Length: 77
Image (cartoon, rainbow, N blue to C red; front, side):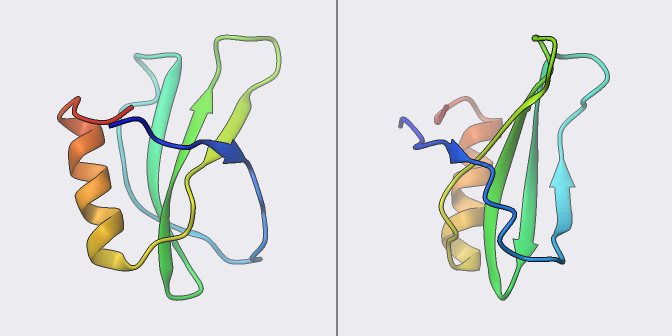
């Protein structure tokens, strides 16, 4: 499954990181985030001079958690 990555929206003042992968050992890290009753995945690419932050669309919890699982298992990217 191919994910649609959009520019970092920063639409809400409060975003809570629910889960994340290791960001010390790889240049691209992922975070499962919650904000405003919805969830999304944030991807940060630190392989360039300036980090590039992208996000998925906001999803209801069960869809976001399924997507998160698929991403960690290598079934989505």
